Image (cartoon, rainbow, N blue to C red; front, side, top):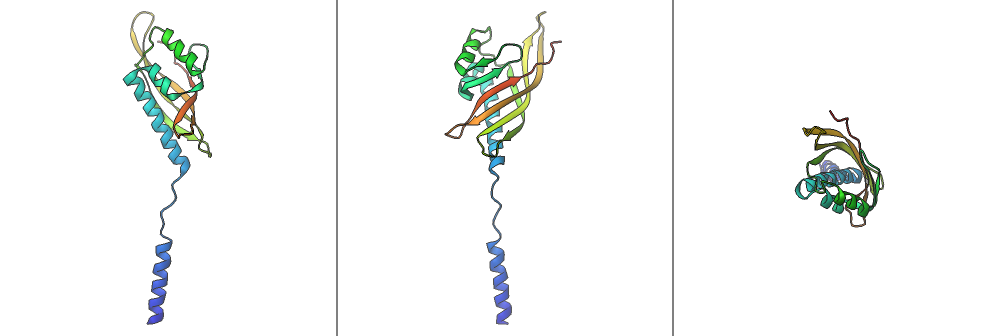
Length: 158
């Protein structure tokens, strides 16, 4: 009887020691963090305008390859381009992240998805365009994400 009790206690003890929960996947957590950053970026455009959102989420050395212009290099130059445009606080621009992929080191990742922008055609008609985008982010020393490359494509105007 003592042997049976000892065996049962041993099995119970081994089971309890082996019943640990799996370790969290750091890559998955980084991808979720990056998706949240990209959603917050889009939300900030809606609340405060494109220039303020870019000032917060763009890295100082960001490269932007816009749909219909020459690339912009550096946050300061890009913000100057926006200020000089006829719609510096464009807030009809939003996007939906489809997927995030983060490097195994967790310091670099990209997002792809689709953006939507409301514009007027040459005839003055309001239209909505939707197209794909891809943004590459790097993780900063404080753990936040900053966009280092932003590229989008536009569908032909109707």
